Image 1 (cartoon, rainbow, N blue to C red):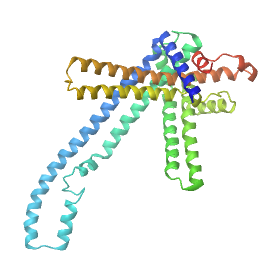
Image 2: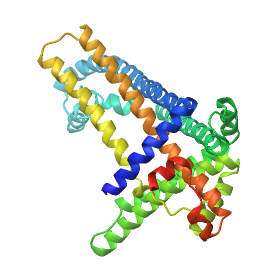
Image 3: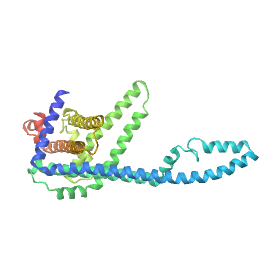
Image 4: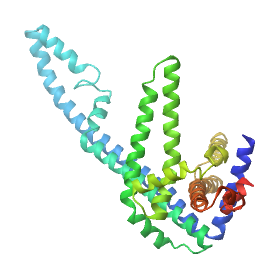
Length: 343
């Protein structure tokens, strides 16, 4: 485990050095962070507006029902019937027409058009992130193969834009694969059979996560279709061209730990301000909040960039190793960040 952390740290430092040499490599990751904020806010306001509109309509309906209920109550005093009593209990029960808890309003808010709006926002959110990840891949590939400063942001965007159909197909297949893995995990039985199904579902999810990050470079770098990229990744796997697994270089674990520390530092700072009765408008709180927000943006962007750079380095190494014999691969140098991690 410690060896994995050491390799991950070396990979991260080499990737940061590469990004410092050509700062355009970091731009898509920074844009990804701000796009995440944008779509999260959009999703929040979409849900808030739907619930508020439904709640307003429910209040108006409840007022009309109250008037009708008053008349029905007097009528029930004259000629009460068991059917009328059961109907009244059903209407005033939980989630009934006159329920005051608001749960009924939430159910009404989940209308087909609301679901469509949420799905549209989430889909556009995912597509934007994959687009920017593809731009990072193209820029890193140019940096590794043609030298620092060789990649152009506009050229990379055009290349990724032309590959959008393949990227969308990748997203749909990835969603199906993860749904199947989750279904297998949820429906597993007990005993040895259940353990086997759970293990198989984990293998499917881990394999497709790895394959998906190799398919995207194949789509962007080679301009192939999804199925062409899938076959390309399969050939890479069958030829054992990539013997380095994600677990061997613990960049994901390091990124999560750093993000957790940053989040914990922010919570500790605001807790101190609350205990010390500092005003949220005081200069020290405002400055501290700005510094913390800037740190979150930088750390998140760096984690996105480093992961994309790692998989691009893997793919570049696979392309180069494909043209070499096994004996030649031993002496052939890897891309700089990968070579630093495996040194």
